[in-house]
Image: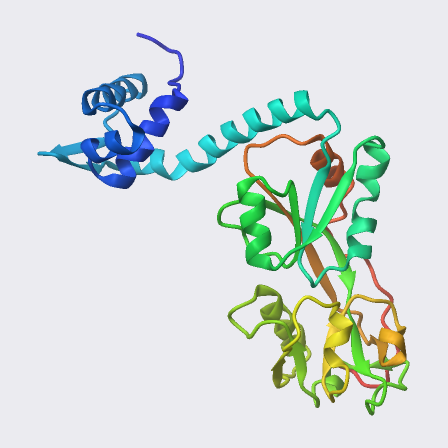
Length: 311
């Protein structure tokens, strides 16, 4: 009896995916520009290699078996990883100093990305780093396609097409228009802030980060009114200019936006995670260095004396 573990030939795996998506050997053959006989033979060889049936046949139509569904669910990551490896190999030969391309959502500033790359700059001093801002959907699509090597976003929601890990936490502060009633305070509580609208960049349910910020407020026993910012792509502190609302930001307390905004500390120092995303089954020395230097646990913070408990 052959005790060797089964293996999957990548060409036959791609043929399998084409049949699974079309539900027909004939249609898959047309898409692949192969004969129907060649595709059928490829699937039979795949089944022999695995020792299981991946399709049931009914005339010209086929349906996935339970084993076939397992194979289909894992195929996309394997084929994408193989393509990425081939692309990276060729790129290394043609462009030895290809940059490490990092995308970040508007909720993370370019300065914060620069600081997040400290370990990469130290561990890979000759590696160029290229940074791009992208909206969340564009960022995840770019990482999935290989256009970006790494994506950074606020949140800890499990990615569906990518691998991910929390690499750090940042303390949240409140951004207020300079003329806001609370702008002259050194410290405010979340309950005080919640008497005013909370400005966010997407409505609840459409953004994990919005939902996360609401959970921060609800843990403090409040549920602020929501105002969705009409200006997209600018730094978070700009969202409150000319309004009576507040926004959660990670900028340090002080003046911002040319004096039109004040950043104020929040009692209890709530924190927001930074999540890194990348393509599964890929290898990256820069990413390895980044993850090894990550601090994915909540750092201790000194409670601020506000006089207004918000627990």
